[in-house]
Amino acid sequence: MKLKFRMPGIVAAAGLLVAASGLVFADAVPAAAAACAGVGSDYNGDGLIDNVVTDPQATVSGVKEAGLIRVIYAGDVPAAEISQASPNMGSVAPEQGDRFGSAIAWSDFNGDGCTDLVVGTPNEDLGSGAEVMRDAGIIHIIYGSPAGLGAGDPATLYGQASFGPGANEAGDLFGYALQAGTAASGEPYLVVGSPGEDVLVDGVSVPDAGSVSYAEGNTRGAITQDSPGVFGDVESGDQFGAALAGTNRYFAVGEPGETLENAAAAGGVTVFSHTLKDGMPTPLTWIDQGEGLTGAIEPGDRFGAALSMTNYRPSNQTYNTDALLAIGTPGEAIGTVPGAGSTTVVRIEPSGTFTEIKALDAGIANVEGEPGAGDSFGQRVAITNTDTSVVTSTSTIRLAVGVPGRDVDGLADAGVVHVFKPLDTDPGSTDKIIKRGSGVLPGTPHARDFTGIALRSGTSVLYIGIPYSKDPATSKGVLYTMPWTDIDGTSNVGTKTFQPGAGGLSDIGTAFATVG
Image (cartoon, rainbow, N blue to C red; front, side, top):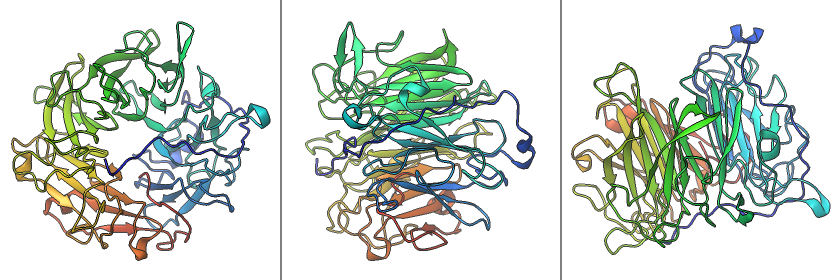
């Protein structure tokens, strides 16, 4: 592959984690709730959807790659900037290589109606001196308030030990992946991936096997492939927890380093239900390319390197009982083309039964473009249901696939985003390629832009981040948000552009829009 993104392994300066209080889940709604509307990612409770954009490589207070996030409020509220140097963020200072903002997720954890943000800092070092634990990782829970994100209660900090159960250890990368929301039980939930976790099995420590930490309401637990009911064996380099996705009923855990049938890094995915069994989420099913899917188990495919999940309502139900899961396989060879990549969409049912809805790559009939070596089709995926109040159909489901290694007009690794209606019988007949300077995506393509490396989808809007933009006008990174209806061609609302130095955002940054 000509494009390779690996788990971060930057050695940062020594940091000391001060133990934080327990995670605040709502038992009684605080008085401030009356001031918060409680919709989606609404961090100041004004009833409008806000956006958080991250730059984990940003320099903060002169410290390189300490990382920061920007909060872009809807309406006329000025944008805000938050780093580990901000007030209310606890006693952990910005340090070189921390990468604050490597992952984000959100829910209302304290029940006040204002959305709270979880920020992952997987390269945070814990301890000091000879006891320093490099890249152990932490997370911050930053609370929303009518005055804005982080302007109310102090943030809550967790290492793996204080989140519990678990231990802070070098290389765990706690916070590398995050997934949060509200479960069908009505309780907020949070899943934290630690793909570098060494797992102890029969007295033997298995390096980089990976784990996830889970909280729903007041329930806490840790899950590995050694947990009851979870498929597979704990093996070195599995990276269980490297990717996460979820809905109110299910969540999925990617393990792209999984070895299957002697094929190293073939990859796999485990799906869980939020329904608790013996105090833990219920394992539902295991998915790999040898389990009734198009494709085959092959070394280096990294099936499950990217995940995205959305609700699905069958025609015989009155609510969203099922889910659609998009699974990226960026290392997949298409024919004789290595690393071209593919993406699979499966339907998950409450029983754990899964059905392949569509297998997509650049080589299938009528799909625009051709497979290219190192394209990494599926390096990122974003699937959404644009209307969960009706029976799910091809008119409501959209899928964006990042192809960051695609060459554009002779420009190596300029990258594109490929959009599909995955429930169509012939998805190639309605697919669209989004590239810079064409249609809805502004800017000029350049070599090694890696367009498609940062994707997120809302119900009505697709977010495309180009953190490594080489366009001089957006050299610190840029985020584009575009309505799905514009992409479909049924509206002309227009694409919005966010970048450092414009729209009230400070002119600092390195890789703006790495996440979100």
